[in-house]
Each structure stands twice: as structure tokens, then as C-alpha cells.
Length: 222
Length: 80
Image (cartoon, rainbow over all chains, first blue to last red; front, side, top):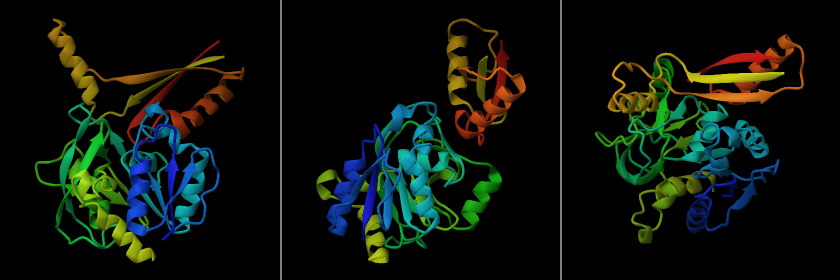
């Protein structure tokens, strides 16, 4: 499996993603700069966490207009898998590659802590190595993770099995509608999630619950 | 030509920041303060001199970048 990690100015989880990918797939991902207009031929593109462009205007808004995102969008339309983590999820909503929007946390505070999640949907390349209903713990670190969409969109996401991760009961850290933590696009090749699986891929960092995301991708994409 | 673009949350979209500002104003003794909504003001200088063209261009700017129309609406004010 060949992968690439996009680096925006003020991305700060790009190297965490690269380390996790290298450890699990055995191959170093290509690091792609935001001003580039091409993504090399890869099976997976990761949009990492961070504060791209200083979160100016809205989280992910400027990154959404960058050269590289035009290329990422084209690749995704051809079926390349895209994983947007935290700020990456915000970028995916800003480019309308995923529906809805991530608003300021309901409690107004930046939340940085491990959070329990339920794996709702295992019919995806990102979650195939988990069990449906399994509880996992990933860290969250965001100020704008409150997922908002109209009721019709939420119903459609849930009905189509596109809500893959939910915050566990009573652990919703940001007020997200229906406890949504991660969603797929319609073609199921793009996943955006606020919690950080790449930060729990090594026991030294406090857990390995996130490994299955990358192991599943490796298994599916070879 | 100068433009002022106001980007605000659509009605019905919860605004926790506005709520916090309202509470803070109440705490400062401004008892008459009821609802508060927070938004953004963006000032733009344009070379365009035709008001209709400017407004059309600004609308496109709002839809493409300045506002996230899933949750925000915008108002355009033109001067000069």
C-alpha cells in the first residue's frame, strides 16, 4: 500500500500519521506540500490534524482552497482512499467532500483527552478490522469538533451506514449531533473523523486501538 | 469601491459563543441583554466600479470562501 500525507502550513499531526503508516505498512509515505498541484500515485491520502493556515476564517477553509486539495478531490473521485483526521475532517467538509460542518465545541473549550468511541460500521476499508459495536479509545484534541448537519442529512448518513464512529454514551466531548465522531462519503472511500487513530498505534504512546484503521487499509489495499 | 460583508449564522443554528457573550454581558450588569449572536465583518476594497457587477462578484466570493453556507448567511453592503 502506497500512501501520501498532505502537509499544510501549521499541520502538526503529519509526522504522527507518517510514523504510524510506516510502522504498520512498512513503507514511508510521501509527504506532499500544500502548494503542490499533484499527488503522486498512491492508494491512500491522509489529511492530517493541525491548524492549517492558523484556522483563519474557519477551520479548514483556507486549506480547502489550496492547490493540493483540488488534486486530492480529483483522486478521490477516481476512488483513491482519503483519510481526514481532525483538521483533515474539517478540510473535507469545507471542500464538500463530506457533508455537514464542524462547529465550535458546545462547551467552547478546546478538548484534549482520550475519548471512548463505538465502532458503528465495519463495512468500510477503514474499519473492517474492528468488530461492530466495539469500544475503542482514541485521543481527541480540538476546539471545533461539533458536527452539525440538517436532520435529513443525519438520517441519510445513519441510514446508509456512513456514520462509522460515534462517541460512546455520555462521552461526547463537543456536542456533536447524534454523537457523530466520524463519517464516510457516499462512495465510502473518504473518511473524516475528529479523534486521532494515528496517535494510538504504539504502546509507548498509551494505546494501540488505532492500529486497526491502518491494518485494515493495508489488508484491503495490499 | 468598498464593500462590507457580514457573515452570520443562519437562524436556528446554535451559537455557543453568542450565548457566552450574552451571559458575560448579563454578569457585567447589562440586565436588558437578551439573545446575542456573533458573526464576522469582512471589509473588501474592489477595483470594480459598477455596483451590480461588484455585488455579483462579492456573492460569488461569499459562496466560494467567505461563508460556509451550510450554517452561515451573508449580507453585502457597498459604498462609493
